[in-house]
Length: 319
Image (cartoon, rainbow, N blue to C red; front, top):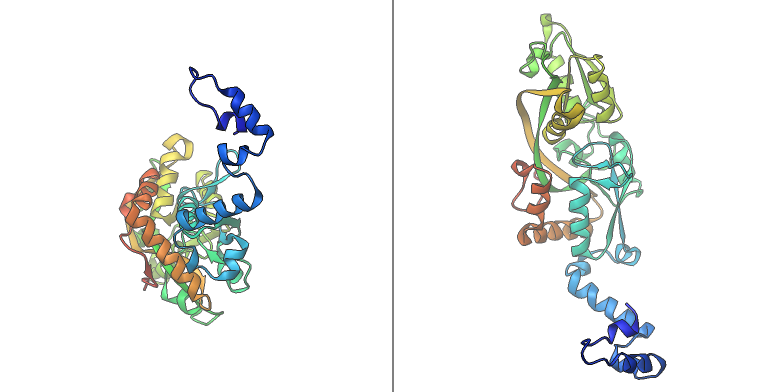
């Protein structure tokens, strides 16, 4: 806004000339507000205090950067994905934006394959990992769920959503699949390193004479969907919000259908390194703040996943 616009009064009064004079003279500072660098800086500091009430909770190094780097597998609609313009959108980015406003920093989502996110967090490449990641005891303790061996430092989780796991098939062709046990002798596609992947491997061990489950794992869920859509598998599995979104949107709703009930309902968590307790507490406080204000509820409703909403921010609530 220019000085003449700032000084504008009613059309009837016709005193625009006064403002023009003010632009040329020192009266500008009093008539239209102090425009000096020091005043601008002061206003910025005031806005930080007023508009980011929880900024003081952040570690100083992050406050100085003004940014929180978030590792995420950005190919998991509607939780995180790229829109047609290439912008990162979804439930997690919307929640990240809301948390950032509470903390006075920008949440910057950086793309990575799901099974490398915790490694990136441990190596300090990311400050957080936020990617539909189920909060489990194994992840809290740094245990590989397949081998049972410790593979690194565990992480802390700030739980922000609840979701189960669903099976979906091509529309009109469920191959007799209603439950996980029906997958014996059939082929399923999943995203590597997910709870769906773990469930398929666990179920396979129970199949016995019914035949093994052929499991094909991909770097991201969209690749798995493409494989199923092309007839390369009998079923796919992913977290309920993702499966439901694929059923609703893929092929205009004509490609897939959900089968059976979702299982293994558990919290999604924002992962934070164990040695970064201050950041964990800051994120928890920010999440509680947007839950209390109603902003969280609006975000969840926007994406049609109200059934997974939480009422408080818990730390390490997974089992």
